Image 1 (cartoon, rainbow, N blue to C red):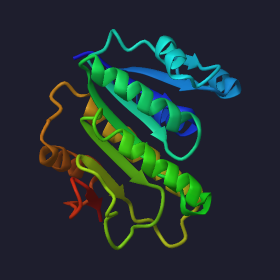
Image 2 (cartoon, rainbow, N blue to C red; image 1 turned 45 degrees about the vertical axis):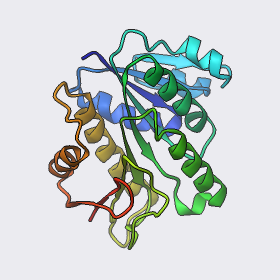
Image 3 (cartoon, one colour; image 1 turned 120 degrees about the vertical axis):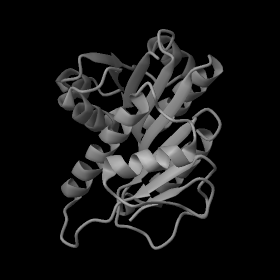
Amino acid sequence: MNAVVIGVGGCGKNILEVVHAAGDITAKLVYVNTDRNSIEKSGIPDKILLDKLDPNYVINKVDLDPYDKVILVAGLGGSTGTAVIPILANVADRTGKRVYAVLTRPLPFEGTSRRTIAKDTIRKLEFPCHHTVIFHNEVLFSRMDPESHIDDMEIRIPMEANCTTGDIFNKINKYAALTIKMFAERNMPDNIYSVVLRLERLLGKEVIVGSYGQAIDVA
């Protein structure tokens, strides 16, 4: 199966660069952003600069035709990833491709507005995405999110008491890169419980299927 990993926006770029540096993935890596400076400085070989976020324009700029599997990567709550990921997911799904998403939620200090936008975006991905993995950039919560939808894997990673914001991002990027590699494999399982077991081995964490939908929790 011919796969492409598309990192959108600044967070998508950071995760994609971890994948690129590892050099152990056969999928094509493509970085997409509206920020010309970020595009020019990125070490990802294949890059697409978007001049606007109009759906028809995005569809014409990002060619998904050569691929059977599309893995979308972004941070939620901002402008670029939030706008582009649902567009690409819906196009890929309509054209018969397997669609996966690896996403991160905003940090608490980024405000309720960004968190609300992130939740709205996740809802838009419920139907076009086969599996969605969401990493929480925050300390482990005591319960799962009751608004999690079916087929949504929410991974909440506990951090040490004195960790910095940079520590959180580095850990999330590493785990997200491992998840992308798993999704890119030719023998990727379809059953969500098989996916949970695979993630458990990859991340070295206990993974629990949550009470809401198909959420999972990493303790």
